[in-house]
Length: 242
Image 1 (tube, one colour):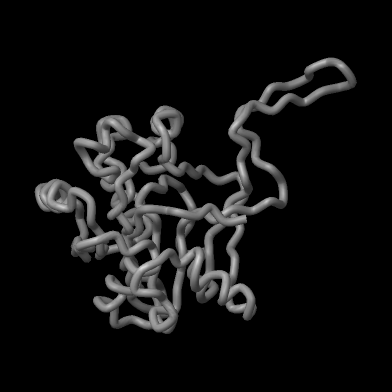
Image 2 (tube, rainbow, N blue to C red; image 1 turned 120 degrees about the vertical axis):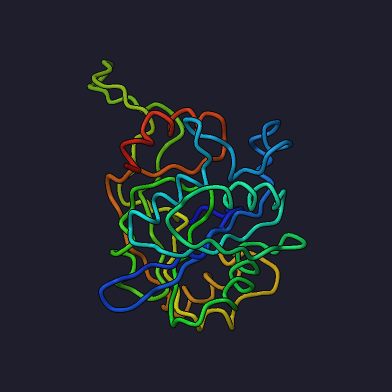
């Protein structure tokens, strides 16, 4: 199962044992579900424990050896660029600006012109996780996936008695798109100038058997789409990104 309509993406650059691998952050969407705060600041600058989402992401990428990142911007791009330019992040940050929304596929294609390497990472700009990037790098054109979590509390029962109550339990063997990809540069030729990679190229590659999956169980993963997501993530963020 894939979660579509991700609005943010980052091209990430990381040094591995084999070669220098580049990557991308998609950070150009409007974040409408976080209004009214996103009427004033772009979603990547929405704070979690007083630190913007995008800064947490850069800390995460740096932790995994990333030394250079390309941020795809659109909505309130100047605010993102100004904020990052004032921070000591310990890595190079470049920008790929969308004059109008391009979707995830169009954004990757545009930013991909800045990449000379044979492969690169992509991460949606609203994802907070502890997923190990090196595990994704073992397969070309691969999607990181996590088990689907329910939105509601789960009751474990014994006949008519409740034995346990669990919040947002993972559903075994039902996998969802975690919003992190490791892609071969040749995929850029197939990407649309405008449109989402999840709706265009990925279904085509999947049909041909050319899209891989790397599964992560019992991992910490948050997609920041609501104020409840911010609240829940804020309780775990320092465990995820240290």
